[in-house]
Figure (spheres, helix red, strand yellow):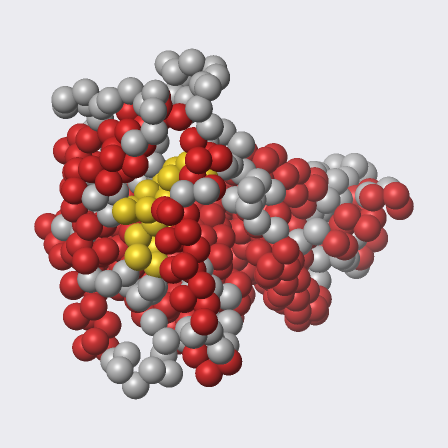
Length: 530
C-alpha cells in the first residue's frame, strides 16, 4: 500500500464506527490532518515497500508508524526510542511532528537514548531513572532544560554544566548513568528526590487526578474492536486485493511460469497421437510432471508473501484492528482470481497441444482439477507459514508434503504396488485425487487404438479380452486395445471416471481442513511476541 492508504486503513478500522461523528468525510479529513502533522503529504502516494526497492526510508517509516497510531485518536502516545538510528535532520523532522501532536492536546511519552541537544530540548517534561529503577527527577524541563539544570545544581558537589554542553549527557554524568562517569558517587540523588518538593508536587498532581475518578467517567468500550465484522472483512479484503494487484513479482511470475511450463511440456506432443503403450506412458507422466511442477511453484511463491502479511497481522491483531477471520478470508479470496487465471492459461495451452479431445466437459474437468491442485498447494503454503516461524522452515515442510503427495500419487508407484504400510498415504495425500481427476477425465470413453507391448499386463489383458483367435499373449502386438483400457489396466481400475465426484469432495474438504488449521495457527501462535 501507499503511505496514505496505510494511514487510511488504520483510521477505517480503529475509529469507533458507532460514533455518529465518524463519517467517511471525517475519516478522510482526519487522515489528511495526520499526514500534514507528520510531514507525510509529499510521500503519501509512494508505496511503503522496502528502501532497496524504492520504498520509504527508515525515518519516513518511523513517521508513518506514528501516523498509523495517531489516526486511532489516542489521548496518549508511547514511543520507544523514536530517534534511534536517525541522523540529525531526520530526528529533527520526527521531533517536529511529535511536538505538533503534543500541541494538539495529546500526551506524547517517549524513551530516548543519547539524544542530541535539539531533541532533548524538544520535550516539556522528564522522568529520569537511575540504575535500579529509582526516580532521580520527575518534572518540567523548562526552557532549554533550565528547570532540570537548576534542580541538580542546587545540590552541593554537582558539577556545573558547561556552555554548549548537552543537558542530556550532563545529567547522566551527574547521576552516574553514563558509561564515562565514575562507578560510584558520594551523593544519592534518588534519596534527595524522595524528600524533595518536586516529588511532593508530583504526588499532589497524581492525587488530584485520582479524586475525580468514578464509574460515570470510566472509559468503556462496547466491543473488542472499533468496527463491525463486515467492515473489518471488507476493508481487509480491499487491502489484500490492492497488495496482490501491486505485486507483479508474485503474480506475473505465476502467470509466466504457467505459460512456460505448458509450452515446454506440451510442445513435445504437438501433431502426435497415442499409438503405443510408450506413448500413453509419456502422456500420463507428462500430466504428472506438470501438476508436480506447478504445485511446487504454488507453495514456494506464496511463502514470502504470506510471511509478510502474517507478521503484519500480528501487529494489527495487537492493535485490535481486525480478527483472524478477516485475514483468512481476505488472503483466500485474493488468491482465487490469480489462481483461476494462471490455471486457465496453463490448461488452454497444454490441453490442446497434448491433443486431448475437444469436448467441453473434459476440458472443464481438467481445468477444475488443475485449479484445485494450485489452490490446495497455495493454501498449504499459507498454512505452513502460519505454523512455523520463518519461510525457510516452511519450505522444508512444504517439500516434505509435496514429496509424500507425489510419491504416493499413483505414478511413481502404481496403486496396486503400494505396500499395506504406506497405503494410508495414497488415500490421505491429495496427489492421487488430483492425478486421478486429470487422467480419468481425459481417457474416459477414449477408444483410441493402443498397441500393446509384448509381455506387459496390457498385452495379457488385450489377448484375454480379444475374440480374435490369432490375438494371443505371444503376438499381442498384432492386436490393439483402447486408451481407456490401458488406464484401467495400468492403474488396476483405481483411476475411474465414476470416482471423480468423490475426488472433488475430498479436494474441497482438504481445502476446508487446511484453512481451518491456518485459522487455529493464526489464533494461537504469534512469532513476533516477546
